[in-house]
Image (cartoon, rainbow, N blue to C red; front, side, top):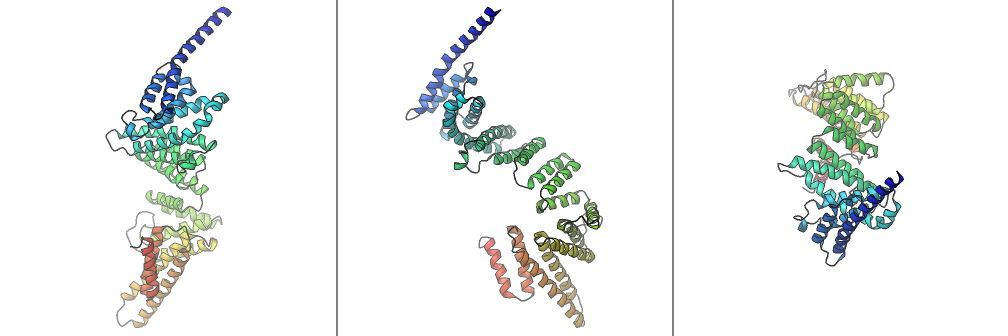
Amino acid sequence: MNKTKLTLLTACLALGSVGLQAQLPEIKGAEALIRQVPADLVGARKSIDKAGTISGAEGLAYYWYVRTIVYNGMNQPKYAADAPEAATKAVESLNKFYELGEGNTKIMRKYGYAAKDLIIGASAGGWNQAINYRNDTTENKQASYKKADLLYGKVSTLVKYDEDHDEVLKTKYPDITYNAVLLNSYQNAYFNMKDMDLSRKYLNALISNRYNDPKLYIYLARTYQVDGNGDKQLAEIKKGRAAYPNSKDLITEEINYYIQNDKLITLKTAIGKEIAGGNADANYYFIRGYINDQIGLGKIRTDGKKGDGEKDTTALRLAELDYLKAVELNPNSLDAIYNLGTLYTNFGNYWNQKAANLPYSATKLYGEFKGYEKNYFATAVKYYEQADGFSELTKQERIAMYRDMRQLYVKSKNIEKANEMKAKIAALNGGE
């Protein structure tokens, strides 16, 4: 038995030796063609591809190392005909190299230092190639989207390795990060492949990697919306609200969920119970204020369904009280402050219209109504000016606010301030 085992072992070693004798000249030849001046990349590709056809090459770290150099070099437009998938092969090769080198100090000591510089070209090349696949508009685009997904997966492995070790990539391509690759993978899976399970895989990976963006929970919720699973859609929104309680985007998403599902009054009732129980913070008052605001403007009915446009001043008064309470509890509640500016503008417009509808003989009442209008417009400006001090206000929100403020200044005959708002709007619009 011992003799039989020894014979088999000797035979295996002999076969391995024959394989190496055939592979190494081709691999070394490829490396020599790369190193010569000028480099012969086409010849090097032929040699390394030939080496790959010989059994056992896939187990040699040296083979994958040289293959990476070859295909990194061929990832240029002039070689597109000879190596159309050079970027993919370079990324694949470097992944294989690190796979074989994991825990193998001999391999990493011999090739590791040189290999780390290959990460830059392989990652950037793979990133750009994946983008090209994602942008395919031909009849083969679905196949290209799948190629992009696979390539992103291989690039993400390289980038994660680099971020955990030498970080050579970020010195030249700081935008190509592990999280950025995951985000692009999600976008490709969601918008192109329409694969909700895959989309959730990448979004959850981003959350696990502490990618700080509350919108990730919105994106997760929308994958379940596409699947028609309203319960899980709401569950993801609530997870996001727990993680980012002050996120305006998540608050809006939750409100929109209830609007779309005709459950806004359910939300209002639940918030009312929280407030009555003394468990409410500024956000609860803001959300209830927003719901009352929408009812007051006629955008939704009191049953929570889409409204018919009829205004309800009682609901607007309730909205005012809730917004004021939100600001009392949190003086930095930008949403409540901004909405108070809008609300008081609407109140002013209401009294403006009431005054305009009076007969000429009602001079005393006209004066009273115009007085209400003036006071509300002044209060609206006060809250808008307060909101203007917040950096979180988006460009479009700021432009809309300045337009409101300009109209308010015109109505109050403050032409200097009206022109100031006009200049601010022009500056935000690029001088238009």
